[in-house]
Each structure stands twice: as structure tokens, then as C-alpha cells.
Amino acid sequence: MKILVCISKVPDTTSRINFVDNNTKFDENGVQYIVNPYDEWYALVRALELVEASGGTVTTITVGTSKDDPTIRKALAIGANDAVRIDADPTDSFFVAKQISEYAKNENFDIVMTGKETINYNGAQIGGMLAELLDMPFVSLANKLDVNSTQATLQRDVQGGIEVVEVDFPFVLSASKGMAEQRIPNMRGIMAARTKPLNVIPPTDHNKLTSVVKFELPPSKTGCKYLDSESMDELVELLHNETKVI
Amino acid sequence: MSVLVFVEIKNKLRKAAKEAITYGKNLGEVNVVTYGNASNEVLSEMGNYGAKNILVYRKINEPNDQVISKLIFKVAEKLNSEFILLSQDQTGKSIGPRVAAKLEAGHVSGAISLPEVSDDFIVKTNVYSGKAIAYVCIHSDKKVISILPNSIQPVEYKVDPIISEFKEDLGNGRIKIVDLKQLGDGIPLPEAELVVSAGRGLKGPENWGIVEDLAKSLGATTACSRPVADIGWRPHHEHVGQTGVAIRPNLYIAAGISGAIQHLAGVNGSKVIVVINTDPEAPFFKAADYGVVGDAFEVLPKLTVAINNFKASQR
Ligand SMILES: Cc1cc2nc3c(=O)[nH]c(=O)nc-3n(C[C@H](O)[C@H](O)[C@H](O)COP(=O)(O)OP(=O)(O)OC[C@H]3O[C@@H](n4cnc5c(N)ncnc54)[C@H](O)[C@@H]3O)c2cc1C
Image 1: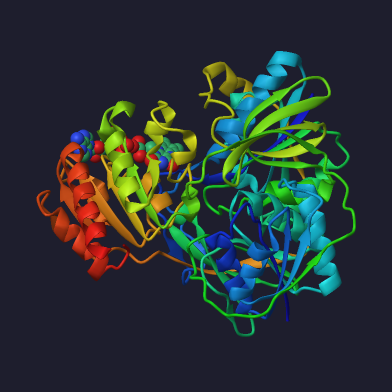
Image 2: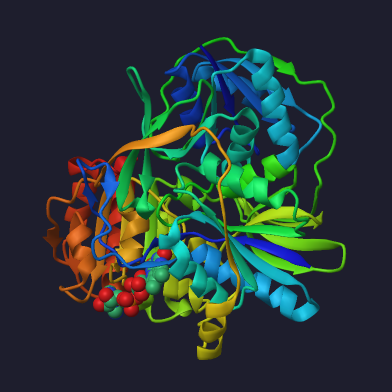
């Protein structure tokens, strides 16, 4: 089986988020980057489990600059066979999906995986766009994946419920919590990652359809009003009259 | 300007659908496309929010993304729709990007307000898992926008809707649905206006009765912190935060949750936050509107009684 896993780098979850240049650019000062948790913990690890059980290869793909290489090496250390980086600054979701689809369309992957969303842009767009561009079915928000020789069975979150679906290869999925357990790379994996192939390929030309014009931090709370545990009637009164939420 | 709103109806019209129609009404005349076997009575309820033309595809009952995307695409093409609007729920997440890619339309997922329109068309959305807001400019003529539930209020605007059926056969998608477990009739977490959440401070799954009692009195949905879902005290779909569900209810009550940065990321869009914690130094108090330094085992039942008294006095 041939699996492609889309990997992106995101600020570590403990990062303080700030902006520079008139709030138009993310402040990278002191920020540590990690592999997007949904890409790493769930998509990549499940892909590795599947090829360990029944053979095949796992390739990762990233649209990014050389700044992404450390996170790509991390994915290789966890166990991916090789990596592709499309050498471009990812401008918007459509641009990224288009780049990946241009690469993937001739490679005969059985499964193309993304995380359910990145924790920086939270767009949850790449998987669905890829599916459309590659004319494949899209199983979004999958939290369980099993395969046999011709098809896969997946469980996923749908509106108001949990659905079990079957789909023939090839298809695209977005992975959410539950699909696998996080793996910590060992020393051997880290050593091996240094010599695994990371193929850098040029981007193709595409328009961008959206751009971020500025960022803003959410309004901060003005201060907490403390109440005694004996004053719950007062709390209810405040929720009703002061903030009017009940 | 032609606006096409995709709405998913199970039994009744959800608030998220009313929000999407209201959003559309602000942009132009609203056409709605939906699927399934909703009664005409439920369909025409959308007219109360300004839905003028309602097109329903009755050949499928399940949220099959390929078929629904094709449906939206065909209708959008016929009406030459400039705007395609959806709710940012599970269905919206699987369909919005597909439709956007097909139309080569700029897509903003999770819009939190109406657009700002001048020379540019700008939509606000949460980024960095709620730690920041981005102003996104859509450059393309066609625009696909999915709206984060609870971000705008539905506004009544009565029109007489025209309901018709989409007759063409769109075939089957390649995904076969073999089982569907409904999670019950409760309000799904992302749409809930009132949420009661608890963390490791509750000490064990056997103690969740007091959380559920309060939720029931309020008519709230329950949620939890990540470790609580990871150790299996509560189901995964209740896990809120940066790596769980992001929510923005009117009221978020958090008991026995420390308020780690990853937890706050998913809940700090809540309008009002009440924190109950034994530790006066718990970081969550910095993000709270109201705080009770105390034992959840004592405070939650007292709050439930107070809510019940309040509800009784309102009758
Ligand atoms: C990459 C990454 C992603 C993460 N994503 C998420 C996420 O999405 N969501 C999330 O929630 N966490 C997430 N976390 C975990 C997060 O860092 C915290 O560990 C977690 O939120 C803590 O959960 P908690 O508050 O329930 O438990 P604890 O931190 O153990 O806090 C328990 C709290 O309960 C209080 N308490 C104890 N007894 C009582 C009592 N009787 N009454 C009242 N209060 C009491 C304590 O004072 C304490 O403040 C993530 C972590 C990482 C590294």
C-alpha cells in the first residue's frame, strides 16, 4: 500500500501568539515549531501501523520553505520512508491543495491523509480540496481506520452522530483524535532520518484566492469577580441580569 | 446578488441553519439548497429568516459528501451564485472545501462575523485555535463561507418561500455508509449556548452525576478537559480545547479544570466564563468572568439548587 501523509509545521501548543509589522505577520520570535499534532499523532502514526502490518510505503508531503525541514525530519524519524517538500511559501489553502494534487495525481497513492485541521490556521480545508482536485471520495474527521486488500473501513464524526463507512481505494481522509496513539521517535529513528530522502520540488503556478490582511488578539477579560460558594443565588442573578446569558 | 445557502435538516431546523440564512440575507436574496426527507412544514420555516427559494434533493438521506457537493455545485452554477454559505459543522467541513475547489472560489471556514465590504471583501475567522483572529480577504468573484455556530444571531425576516424539488439524479457517491450511531437528541457541543465542563479535579467518572445534574437544570451540554477524555472518563467528543472541539457558547462553566493554555485556546471565545476551582492560583481564573474558589463537590450541587430555584421563580 502506498500512503501519502500531508505534514505541516505549527507553533508549539504552549506558544504565546503575537504579531508584528502592524499586526500583519506572526511573530516567530522564540517560537518552537512542531509537526501539526493531527498530522503527526493520528495520520502519520496510523499510516505507519498499516504498512508495518501489511507492507507498503509512507511518504510525507509539505508545501513550505527550508524552514520546514526540521519538522519534516521529525516525521521521518517517527518512521516515514521518504518526504517531499514543494518549495513555496504556503499562501492559502487552495494554493497548498493545488500543489499537493499536482504532485499526487501521477503517483497512484491508495490513501492520502491530512490532519483534521492545523492548529494555527484551523481551516480544515486541505483534505476536502485535495479530494475534489484528485476526484476522490473524502472521509472527513475519521477517528478509526482499518484496511483489507481492496477497501477501507472508517469511523468518523458526523453531525449528531458517529458513522461507519466503507470506501474503495484511492481516497482522501482527514484524521482526528482516536485514530492512533502518539509515538516518540527513538535514537535509531532519528539517526535514520538524516539519510532518508527529502525531495525538494519546485511549485507550479497558481493564483491565490484569499489572503490574511491582518491579525488581532481576542479581547481579554477585564477581571474576575469572585463569589463565595454560599452565594450561588447571587451568581445566578448575575448571569441573568448582569451578563444576560441565562 | 445571488446567495446560495446549504442547510442540513435532520428533524427540525437547527439554530445553525437559521444563522446561515440570516448571514445570507445580509448579502442578497437567499436561495437554500438541502437534501433528505424534511417535511414541507419544516422547510417553509426557513422563510421566517428570509429564505426565498428552497430547493430540496430527496434522493438521498445521508450526508454523502460527493453527492451533496455535486448538488451544491449544480445549483450554484444554475443560479450563478456569488456566495455559497454553509455552517462550519462536520458536514460543512467535509463539503465546503470540495465545493470551493470545484468552483476555484476563495473559502473562509469558520467565519465569526458578517463580512466587511468596501473595495475588499473581508471576513473574520479564528486562528491559532482561538488565540487570535484573522481578517481574511477573498479575492475571487465566487466565495464559499462557512459560519462558525453561535457567531451571529438569527434574525426574523418573513417571506413566502417557494419550495421545489431538485429532480436530476446525481448518482451515488463512492462512500458506503454501513452504520450510523446517533448521539441522542442533545444539542451538539459546537452549537450549544450553555456548556458545563469538568476536568481532572472531579477525580473519577463516577462523580460526573453532579456535572450532569447542573447541565440538566440549565439545559446545557456537557464537555471535559483532554486528560479526562484520554483516560476514558468521558467520551472523546466532549473534549474541548486546542486539540479537541473549539466552542464559543454564551456561558461556559468549568469545574476542576486548571485552565492550561491548550484548554483555554478552545474555549476563550465563550461570552461568559465561570470557573470553580479549589486552587485560588489556578490559571483559569485569569480568563474567567466569575470565579468561585471552592470544592466542585460542594459548589456544583449548590449552583444546581440555585438554578432550579431561579427557573421555578421564572415560571
Ligand atoms: C499538544 C497538547 C495539546 C493539548 N490539548 C488540550 C486540549 O485540547 N484540551 C485540554 O483540555 N487540554 C489539552 N492539553 C492538556 C493541557 O495542557 C492540560 O494538561 C489539561 O488541560 C489539564 O486538564 P485538567 O485541567 O482537567 O487537569 P489538571 O491540570 O490536573 O487540573 C485539575 C484542576 O482541578 C482542580 N481541582 C482539584 N480538585 C478539585 C475539586 N475538588 N474542586 C474543584 N477543583 C479541583 C485543581 O486545582 C486543578 O486546577 C494539551 C496538551 C498538549 C501538550
